[in-house]
Image 1 (cartoon, helix red, strand yellow):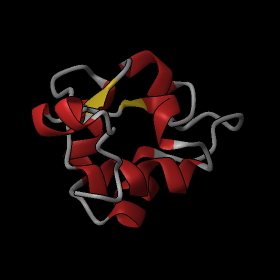
Image 2: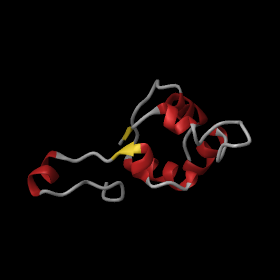
Image 3: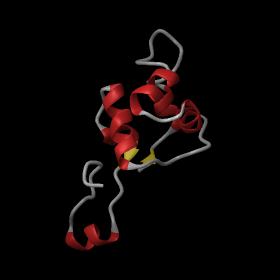
Image 4: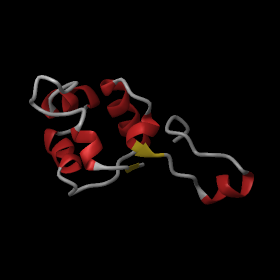
Length: 88
């Protein structure tokens, strides 16, 4: 799934007291390397697996659609269905 905006993710993640959690804590929750989260925050990486996107959204207590574009597969487009984060 494609991250909508690194800035949007930074609004939730960071060392500041007003953020939901640190990048390191998010990485532990999602079970990814901390550098993966850093790459998303720094716009060096823009996408991840649907399961990872779902875990990030869950950790930050927001719907996955807030942070990520829910991609629609070509087959789903023909059938008129969206591919959800949980389907993949």
